[in-house]
Image 1: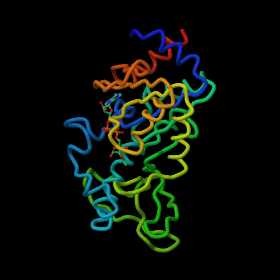
Image 2: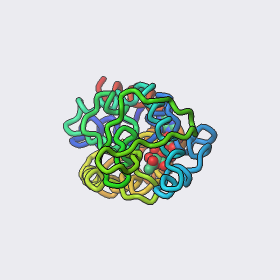
Image 3: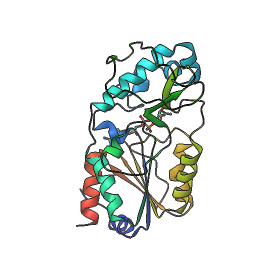
Image 4: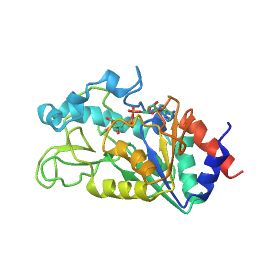
Amino acid sequence: MQFDQTLLTCLREARHVVVFTGAGVSAESGIATFRDALSGLWSRFDPMQLATPEAFEDDPELVWGWYESRRMQVLGTSPNPGHRAIAELAKRVTQLTLVTQNVDDLHERAGSANVLHLHGSLHQPRCSRCAESFQMPLAPPAEPAEGRRLAPPRCAHCGGEVRPGVVWFGESLPVDALEAAFAAAAGCDLLLSVGTSGVVYPAAQLPHIALQAGAAVVHVNPEPQALGGGREWLLAGPAGEVLPALLAAAWR
Ligand code: OAD
């Protein structure tokens, strides 16, 4: 794989790198993205029936069962070379901030620390009434197939229904994580945007913030991306191949 020398120098000399990831970074671990045609979750399921507070109110068993099936799927997968390359990059640059839209824990399992989860986590459910966090049992009672209903557990504190710890459409993002991500994008020298369609705001603002602040922006994606100018690159290909090759080329 060939890389632009200016880009390699930029990466090697960056004082602060932001890595911004989406579902594509976990695709090679076997986790479906949202918007890829045919395989994407939102081409097979209606987000309005599964990913809004109203959906959970209307049919908590459908929503809880669907998120539990996704959590079980994630527990059965492993980080891929893309996740591992990002953890490795953090050791090579002075400062790295990892911001993800993903609700899996594959970055952490690959060795990344202090990951900013903008859209919450499948592994941190909480009470829908009092927001008390809920400790999931290590082994689930049953493995729900996609779409199977499952009654949500009850909160030990107030008896309310426990809900998935993810951000749904119409909900605010966690303020601390979002502010930290925006500040990192505004102060970085280079932002690597990996495996995201960049259509869900406010998360999708991050590459624009970095560009406006004069940073270089590098997209890693098998699909073509609209590029703004000289400080923006596309590395076309799957993250699990492109990222290890990029590190090897930059620090050969
Ligand atoms: P999308 O499904 O919208 O986009 C996934 C992107 O990954 C696409 O641009 C693909 O071309 C790319 N891709 C696929 N395979 C890849 C690979 N092996 N390597 C690199 N890139 C690959 O997923 P997100 O952008 O993450 O929100 O979606 C953003 C948000 O929309 C999600 O966080 C979720 C969803 O609704 C919430 O859950 C709140």
